[in-house]
Length: 122
Image (cartoon, rainbow, N blue to C red):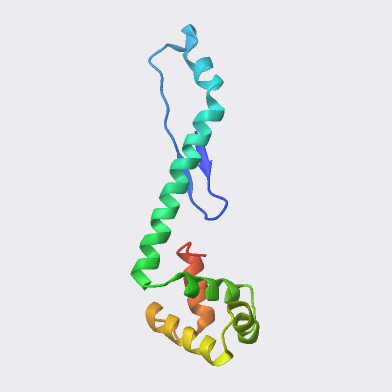
């Protein structure tokens, strides 16, 4: 059963087999359960994506506020809008950007946002 995560570029495959021979209806029985099997494949892929996302967030020591700021940067929101949405001053946003750049070893916040997207953090 294939599973594709809409949030990432990952593709998962759940391999399902039956001991019942094809001529005895084994394949037909699996097809009857394909909705459930696909749901299981999607759930397993979601768990994997979540684990990977958490691992990368920990690696870069990013908290939810950092990730929210990066999402807003990615959709090209100016610092003033990010400040407004987060209820902070523009100076605080630039401080957050600086901290994110330091954590992610980048020199520009746009670069950090693209890197976070590449690692499926956003």
